[in-house]
Each structure stands twice: as C-alpha cells, then as structure tokens.
Picture 1 (spheres, rainbow over the protein chains, first blue to last red):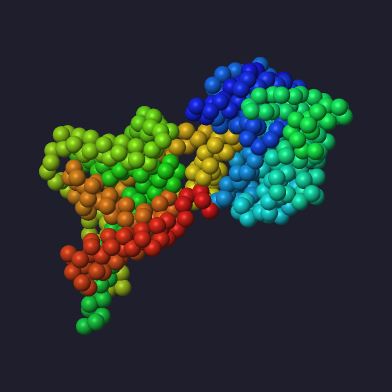
Picture 2 (picture 1 turned 180 degrees about the horizontal axis):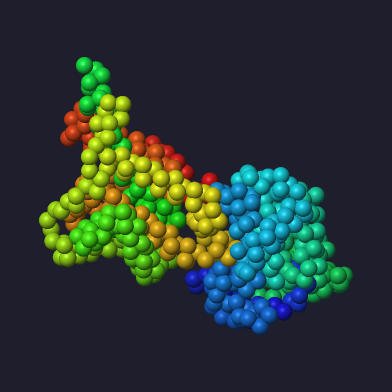
Length: 236
Length: 295
C-alpha cells in the first residue's frame, strides 16, 4: 500500500505542493493530471527523494519515505522514470540497464543476467543496440530504456513522468502496454501524463491537481468522472 | 654529429620529459577525476602529493622498503581523502556558490597542510635515495633505470584506472553519478559514498605520485604548490574531468617543456607551457577532450 498524507513542498518561498494526499494499492495505476506548473513533477520528485518535503508523510508498505535520500527511497522499492528520461550519455544501453539492477539488492549474478535477458526479449531493439551509447537511441528507444532501467529492479512503486512526450503514436501504444504489464505484475504506478485519453486507458483512478493541491479525484473508467476531469484540466 | 646529438642530448631529454610527463599525469589524474565527478577544483591536491612524499620519507626512514611504500602510502592517503570529502567538502557542497566555496575551502586546507608539513618535518629539502639506481642502455642511449621504471609503472596505473572507470560496474556508477547524481541515486547508486570514495582515490593517486617522485624532485613543504601548476595546466588543456585528456596533455606538454628548454632556453619553457594553457582557455575553454561521464 502506498500513501501520501498532507504533503507539503516548498522551493524557497514558493509553496509548490499544498497538502496533497493520495492512496494506491498494489497493481493500481494512478493518473496524475493538471495543467503545466501545478506541481505534478514536483510531486513525483518529492516521492523519489529528489526534493525534500516540508511537511506531511509518504509511506510505502508501512515504511516512511519522506526524509530519505533518493538512493534509500530506491532501495525501498521505488523506481523513477523522470520526464526527460535522463539516460546517461557516456554509458552504453547495457550499462544503463545494469545500473538499474542496483535498485534491488541480494540477487545473484545469474538472476541479474536473467533480468537483463527478459528485458531484451521484451524489447529486442534494446538488445540490438546493447553496445551503443544510450543517448544515440531514438526518443522512443530512450523512453523504452528508461522504463526498462526501472523494470530490472522490479519496483513496488513506479513513478512515471510524461512517458509519451514527443513520441510517435506506435511507440506510445507500446509504452502504455508496458505500463499495463507492470500493473499486472502488481506494481503500483503513479503516472503523470499530458496524453489524458491514453493515460485514462491504463489508469484505475486519477487525481487532478491545481496550484499544488488535489481538486478532483475519480474513477478512470467512469464517464462522469472523466468528463469532470476534462472540465478541470480544460482539454476539451 | 647529428646522430650523437640525438643519442646524447635529444633522446635523454625526451625520456626526462616522458618521466616528468608520467609524473604529472599521475597527479593530474586524481585532480581531473575529482573535478569530473564532484565538480570540485581541489586546490589542496598538490599538498596531498607532498603529504604522500613526506609519508614515504618518514616510513622509509623507519625501514619500510620502497616497494612496500608504493602500496602503503596510497592506502594511508585514502582514509584521509575520505574524511576530507565527508567532513569538509560535503558540508559546503550544496551551497549556492559551490565552485567558489569548495575552491576556497580546499585552498585553505592546502595552506594548513603545507604549514603543518613545515612544522612537523622542517623547512629543509630532503631527498630519498633512488630506489633503483643505475642506468640502462636502449639502442645506444643511456637512460636512468628509475625513470624508465616510473614511465612503465605510470603507464600501468593509467591503464588500470581507465579500465576500472570504463569497463567495470563501479566505473559505470562513477560515470553515471558524474553526469546526473539524482538519476544515479534513483537507480540505487550510493552517490555520497561514490563521491567520497572517488575523492579518496584521487588523493591516494596524489600520494602515490609523491612516493614515486620524491627520489627525483626532492621533498620540501612547498613541493606541492610548485608541481600543481603544471598539473592544473594539464587538466585545463586536456579538459577538466577527462582521463584521456590528462594523459595526452600531460605527455605532450611535458615534451614541449623538455624540448623547448633544449631548443630555445630553459627559462622560456614555463612561459611557453603556460601560454598553451591560456591559448586553450581562449580558443577551446572545455579543453581538448570531453568530461568524465559526459560521453
């Protein structure tokens, strides 16, 4: 079980996240929506340990995550795919993937290699380019690599920020298919996405933010809730 | 006549330049790795080099063999570097003016170390005996054995460091943390320990250079300050944070220094070398090679 309770985040004097609370169960995909600048990415960064919370609590399976450094948050089972993918330029595809194995300790070398092979079976384009520098991949392939990099760590909670940004529709469909697979494996997923229709297709529930606070929650499959969401984020 | 010039003047001068180059590379290697990873210009690096030389001198005087010193001194320097990084640099690392603050902090630390060396060991110059005396003849050219050893060992160390950085998972962690510490941390890389470990490793390399160079350049409290100018020149020309850049620039610059003192005049060798640094800063401020972890 994952929960955020009355989270507060400040950047200097700016109050960015103003008392956000949410809950998610294993295998649930939670869509986080809102206009640009309402605090969606800051919320993800706060959970990942990139920015400190000035109040409230973040809990995963009873363990507090707020106040921990990013590497400790990761070791508690949290994988993060940031909006700009953050592929390491000097590292090959395989080196990027192998760094992802560090998320989960205690696995044998054989188990780790098996994890990598499973990724290569699922994403053969990465296998073909395993020796290539990660940043020489296309945008879609880099997004795949960023997703794969957390998948090898088998996170309990995946934070996925704008995965479809700037990608061709076919790649976007593949990205959402991967999210469904992670959901089926029991991973909790927080999904920030501008492609609202696509995200609602994989999400179970959603939260809409406005000025750093939750202004609407709803069921992603409920037509009324979806209509209210569209009103809030004004995409119609 | 021309062959005699090559055999008795040019070739020994080039070997002298090469051994100095390898020495500078060893010092610059630690400096550039620390900059590449932590974005910290370690102004105390020369004093760590001097500290290594003094540790070798003190331990050597109590009977420890040179071969053991090559191992022991870097091992002693590592915890010193680790404590400096965790105890001093980490404390100011997240301040807004990190570059200036860490530069001034390490500059101050260098002064403290230098004065400490004066107090403990005295201001006089000391010179340990050459561990490998004698000379070897290569194609009719007489070359000091210890300098040949220094060139060989230096090359082995550079290759070992390059292999660790570029071919191991530890190296991948270092490169990832150098490029993007937040993302590396979110994949489970213990970034703070990687930083401290890398700083300690750089300091150990400086200490090792001190051990190796003490028999050639003598040991005195300001030896670090004198040598670090050349090391900084190498790092700037090669590209701050670039291992390949440090090696290439170190070897080329010291050859220019050696040959210019032969062809022009020894008094002109330093102005020529530092002019190259100024030119590189003006024409290609990022140096000849890229930064560690930046592809």
